[in-house]
Length: 381
Ligand SMILES: *Cc1c(COP(=O)(O)O)cnc(C)c1O
Image 1 (cartoon, rainbow, N blue to C red):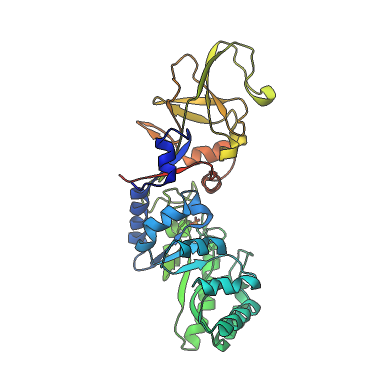
Image 2: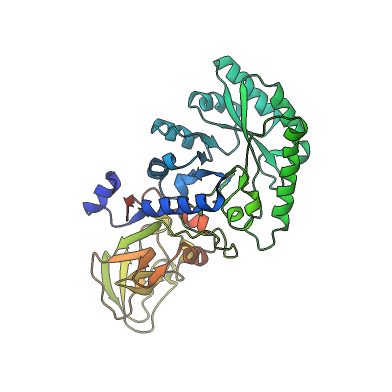
């Protein structure tokens, strides 16, 4: 167990709501993915606070066991360098010109999505007297960042003219790898393979090719190429209900709180803002100090369940910013009792898929919205 301020806060009894991240499970998930895709390399995707698991701790624990680290924005990359992470780090998102110097200063790999940007990178690297490490981004059907596959040769040719740039990699991203119908993903893969023929035709060395996200690792193994970019799967969650479970992973995050209040509510006395719920008989209602300000979505009001003392109970009334209420009918619960919002106890479990269904969203959004106000506690099996 790693001791940090969050752990101390929980053990002190300062904070009644916390997220528990199991580092052993993360390591297991990474190893399972690696086994599935070998000999392809694995890029650890830790954007968005490592899908809510904690950018700093997850990177510290796993960066040494991976080939590459992928983040979405420059700030995340700089933070990792300041922590002393020495693994290669790529920022996968778009770049604007004024950021280029920061990339070079922190030895971060740049994503080049256009000829103009690549030339700006080359010029900046020349001025600083360094060589920029760059991956070319090809858009094969996502219409996000990246040069269109049908114009990609312009970017590839521009790269040959650059003096201060090393084209270490080339990549693309699937729009529909998690769909039951693989047709669009296959089309994207074909387009990417066509772009890659540029190097064969000119007998140039092939840069590191990467395209597969979690869903593609599971159902399109031919897209694994030289490196894969798993995000959600690393955290033990399957990217969609239809993706085959071709890699066995286990959820690494549990979200817990404690009962802080107990009262008996008479029939016809509605609970919480807007009076959206009331009972027709006397019930015991407990208050739990978690709300939408922590990332427990208001849209889950009157739909969610929690586990207390090994049993599931319904959340009732509107979820508030910092608190919510749970109906335990005529059972017992005491101040300080653990409340499982996400996780397991005995045979009972609440999954991130459950929360996503109650909130009307996808698991990705649930995990990345667990607010920084919720301390992360790191455990090992
Ligand atoms: C977020 C992201 C990934 C990881 O996606 P998952 O579906 O979580 O595996 C891979 N590549 C890029 C470019 C991304 O932005």
